Image (cartoon, rainbow, N blue to C red; front, top):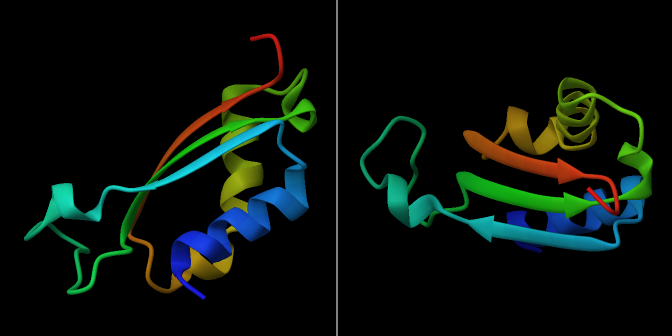
Length: 88
């Protein structure tokens, strides 16, 4: 299973999103800190979930970071997060 697939699976299980995009942007960071051969080091996440309703941007990011703690401790160097509740 790829890192992208693990991220998708974990976010789906944790937040039951109405919309989820996991974009590997590693190719844009070639040669930068944290980049590794084979990619899967820099990701952008776009997620819409009712679980984020009434939560601040920081709380949303903290929840996502907690769900992906293993990936962030291992291969993932950078994670750009766009998290919204439906209708926002």
